[in-house]
Length: 316
Image (cartoon, rainbow, N blue to C red; front, side):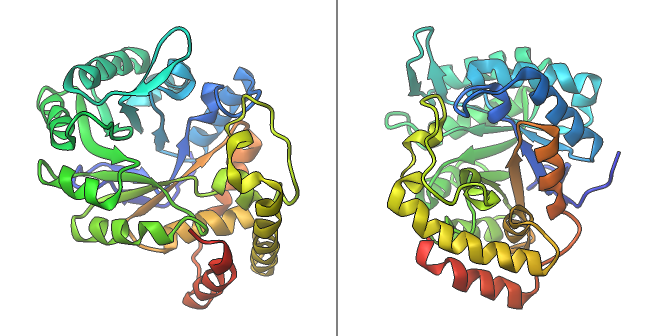
């Protein structure tokens, strides 16, 4: 197994690879056509290359992501840190809604334990806040579940700064997961500050901006209806052309350092602060290998300033 850069996860004490595999796509839902054999190969490759942090959720593939991850990791699942999430619910007709009430979260944890074939989930997040349940009540439920030994570290995902501060009134958090990349960074500056002050690991999802930062999409792309990007404004005609200009400049910058733009984008997340971790999504082993090119080197302050200047017109 290859050795990757590692870091301590929040207050929990567990070590994780700073590049973690996001397992939304391998669930086969929301990313167009995904073949199970490719997903299996991607997870095996990540494990073999030294990835020790795997991020999933009960809603990814409506349970399939967790089941597939457990099947592929086998006995190794107890040697890595698996993060899962609860609070996004669904029914047989495909209707999806958010429910972070105590009963809903408890049921979600029990279902995830069964699918992941674990006695304790190493890191568990509230997937997103709902409009009804008080945040403190939801977080307290996770505290009780941790006391019962069913989850380890506690995290929240897709919370804004005020909501994170409300959660911290109940218990210390080990991880906060937010969308964070060279384009989506301005809105997360306050969250970065909170994580720094409270010893929280910031776990970035969307580090490659749903593929924009791979350089594959520089013109209008028609995604199939079952691909969530078909509903994203970033891939609309005028927007994609605006992003394409920034992407081309970032590609040239990355190439001048002997790297791909995806390496540059993932490395930026890791070098923006010492307490950040970046997830990468991958549907094939080739994509895993490409994304791990972000490991083992650093961006200078000069390069960080250049990235900041290039992305200014596209930032949110």
